[in-house]
Image (cartoon, rainbow, N blue to C red; front, side, top):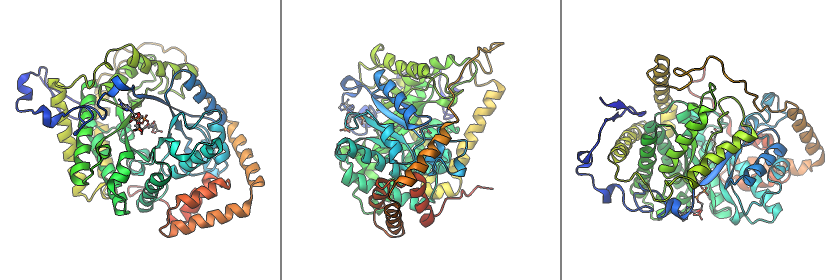
Length: 526
Ligand SMILES: C[C@H](C(=O)O)C(=O)SCCNC(=O)CCNC(=O)[C@H](O)C(C)(C)COP(=O)(O)OP(=O)(O)OC[C@H]1O[C@@H](n2cnc3c(N)ncnc32)[C@H](O)[C@@H]1OP(=O)(O)O
């Protein structure tokens, strides 16, 4: 009997040569590193260079987070990935009343360039690539990174990294939006233009399906809604006067990796194929780099369990393997204790070691796209692709990603899928080891890492000093210039950089933009 995949597609007990009757490898696969990039974006893939091991980290103040980055680098991490706390992500200072209780909790607290300097102290910015999970205030954090680079004597064209900068999925699944869609998209176009001119090696956006998957999206939904968001960003930049090949090579993506290896590999391959086709046929991109879907992967946090947490080590290894077999460019493997608390030093190291085992002790990196030609994986790649394309067409029928968001379409579809998963788990039809089967009577005690609540007062004191020391008229003038640009059509990043250099805070800069652009109120709010 056929089993259902996570996308609700049938998985037959046996596949054979008939499965691929009429299937044309030249059309469906091509060569690795060539259109339609099913087999991966680089001809040599991991035989030429391993993926970037990039562990997402950050908590407390810049001092604690810097220590964690130094430790990850010493342990062999290949790129940094910064987690910011919620006040920073929402554009508030640590001393704002709304920030109370959240400072430094889910990431590092950054209020000004003074904090950013500490965060990257002793880390040469021309030697490391840095991802920053920041969305509505992405421009601010990017500019502060550039300012720290300048202080280190690193020219902007040597900086490499990624800002998440994907506001559309914030409306759909993640929630850290500030401004309404129209000014948010204008800001994103300003970022694309600024990076093209000033920081050409920067990946300007990480168009993310991860959070939709965490909210319950199926693999087909995850790639469909993410690629539909990607299409909206491309349309925005083209409408803002950019040539598609001037910005598309620096678009990047971010997906989840679940324990269902076969379907995940199919999903990654299908996503590459759809994106290459859309960019070539719909947008007329000519540069092969514009057609390449490059992506980061994080193992599925939602599949981790608080019960018998060591079992998560096994899940993460399986999920990481799926990402590697699917050709990821960059990978974060979760720590086994992440369902409970922030990772400890030891659990963060074990997570990185999991990637190192995959890279250096297995043979899956010895050959490109090992599943190519597999009856089941090729069939699933076609089927996930078809299911995703159908969903993308429904988004188009609703007028594109923003309009579909306003209709509540993506959220509604994801919620239906989440409900199905919850029902299957409750009924025991979906086995979750240690939760609805194979439980133990008593769980081992576990001492989680906790963030010191005193850091909120420390950050507030730092802000008071900063406000007392800085040249306030210069800050006021720079913020006024920023508002003028936001009201008109000039690129806001140039006056924003001046304001941040004058030590304006994250809350002040975002506050100035809020005054001009307003804030987003979701259509389904009550
Ligand atoms: C859940 C949580 C939350 O909600 O808070 C989150 O969001 S965490 C979210 C965390 N997000 C992230 O960490 C996102 C990370 N994203 C990225 O790092 C990027 O966007 C990425 C996916 C494009 C990966 O970039 P990367 O620099 O690591 O890797 P690349 O693939 O670009 O490789 C680096 C350079 O090596 C070259 N290169 C790589 N492999 C090969 C190969 N086999 N042959 C030849 N060249 C190669 C590339 O062309 C590139 O150079 P050149 O550039 O010169 O071509």
